[in-house]
Length: 569
Image (cartoon, rainbow, N blue to C red; front, side, top):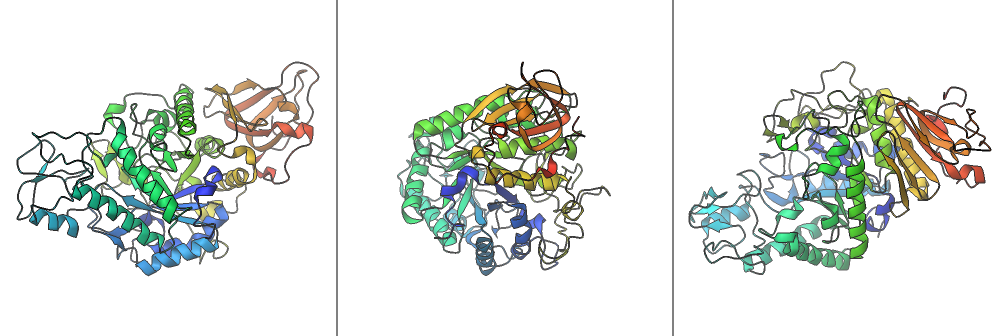
């Protein structure tokens, strides 16, 4: 087994990178990003240092929901290439130590899928949820069968039948989870995953993972289903992973997944932990979210306490379950506002990236966030991107901004620009080409943070974490001796921190240390009192407190992003 396929054992320090394939890189010049384009950019991703890439759906589809309406789970959509292109991508990624994850739409299909067309003509087919009479939330059936079917999201996405946890004679469509239809669908999931594992795929991100078994209080039957899948996976394909779109890690990981992301939705609080960090009311906005100042806001009126408490609860639940697994923390995703949105610019987003890469969770970088691509307001609605009057996901799906990127070591030179959506019209839009050789750029910061995460065992998910403060600054200590102090606000802040004056800054910006005696120093500790870390607006510092004991590991990142001692003040 190659390391690229055996991802399960490496999740503690894995950095995931999400690719929206139609927007990432266009190799054949037809205007749509494709698998060959991703393969051409693997050298860039290897240079950046990511361990795994997750591709949003790339299967045959009518694209009413940008590919989350699948018409053939076994075949790559022609606009992205072929199954052979997928095999080449996994092979070339594996040569660079990068795992490839696909997006498994487990709970529904397109209404164009042959399974659904057959079911619509066959009253004995139990693969989908059918009612003979009108029922709330059901849609009229299109075939000879007549009746009504239950969709899982949009009306063109009929729900696969995995059964109901609670049956009711008055509602005969509520089949039990062990009925023939639900059992056939479980077998189909295994068949789909095995097919792509055979082409070198290392795992799946599972779309709407909590939605399979209907009317399931506490997700009891849903958890049984995923435990069954996990047991099969560990037995037949050890090392492969399944990561859920559930948005509630304290439930999803004990239910059998290797990881679950905090998301903008999910759980009893509808995604509040992640939104309390990033959501500033720009870009994708749901009226049900209400007004809440984000921690990563320049006004400095938010607090990370909600996120920290949710992470602590999830971590304890995962440990109690005893099956292992990690929490996932994304910079953003294809359904949510990017970090750079509204009043938050790329300079302010730096602090968010430091948090994502140093927190005890699996970080996921959404393509382009590493250069500060923004949510582009006014982007045309496309392929089901609009979910509400103020919630259009298209602004987070615009083409990757490569610029005039030279050949080697980043790939075969300037790629064709995807025209799936209009490019950000801002003439000052960030590009990879403009940042790749700039030591002070956001891109180089993210690269250094990834290298630091890989190289320092104190940043492993399993390493202990002590939270010192949750506001301005947010401060915590990883592994007993690695202090992280973050200030996303515009106002300067301070934090008393023993040993800070003797610490070595690994990654830092806009900081200074006031030694215990009152003198300003970065190399010598004071003899009395407590050292104080001062951060300017949008400043951050990752400090090796073990440096004073001469135990600094030799694999730490060069201080490329740390200020010169003479200029740090």
